[in-house]
Image (cartoon, rainbow, N blue to C red):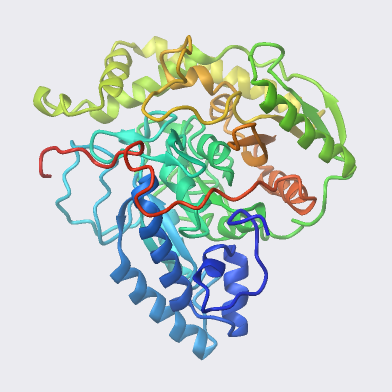
Length: 500
């Protein structure tokens, strides 16, 4: 057994550690067989969540009373042989960007009032509720999800499960830390420039940014069509299961794609034999990749080749799109905060204030020029995928760095986009892209490999990732045991502020 990132087989219900280490698929199997109940599983996950919270600050809210009530209702349904859906009784957490009925969605900001009514679910949350999932809590995010690490003035910083003094990544860092530490097998994250893949890479879990529109989103993101909702899980099989639920239609999203033909679990075990795989270790020499990261990613590529894929080292030739991405991203940030008066604007994360000022200075022609860059990238990648089924890159060029900074110490970059060159381009092109673990560095910190498919090829990306899991190429050691309160001095919680 390798810990929470892999299934554990049968469990003794008296040992909550076994239940917290199980995948969602294994929990559902156990409920159906009567091996244990949703009440036992949810109780174990809540206990684990409370235990790890002081060390890593993964949650902004844990709602034990509501979760246990949902678990008891689920247990009754299983006893009657009438489960509500595919995830009945499975504990799920939700990033505090997405609406979850019954409690505030504060988005990491003192500028958001906790006053209700909070009477609406986001589309993906609504689909989970219909399928009987149990909501255990909301997970931490930087303010309005604006950057690739997770800290905010309102809710503090989220530490890495493998080293609480290092970042979990972001902006879905709380979700990644929760999944890695057994505080629920599933979490919903959002990704506008890498925000499920960055923390997945740093925390040793699986995450998928689906094709844009595949998972409905409401309210619409201020970051426009860069923003995706995606599953954060222990393996590709659980992600496929979660995708079967959250891709259900929702009339509130005018840009959603049509119905999915079949299940994402269909063909998951089809392997990679014969797939045409392009391997780009450094985007044509443009990215300096840490030596240990490069070696681990190359081993994952060799594993694909050993499984029968036809691998060629080849770069897609993407242009430098950093400034175009900044134009789109910073404009979105300016849009989400434009209603704030000077007093409330002063409450924002200082870095966010800076990018908002820059975003507000762009004009319509600047924005349209960035859209032109984006369209050219989409055409280029469309042609590229007529030759190659998948593109493989490192997820990130580095492993988790010290908590508290937007960029690694000594970095020449000032913004998080400088060290995430492999992630944000595929938000520009709207392609499905997944991160899965492929090893650890000398300090025991996880390393991620990214699999990118053509638009609408989400099932193929999941299939290739599943093949790597089945081959043992995605196994990583579990996070070190974290005693309650360990690391609190390096993973600070919420700071004081106005009482919204």
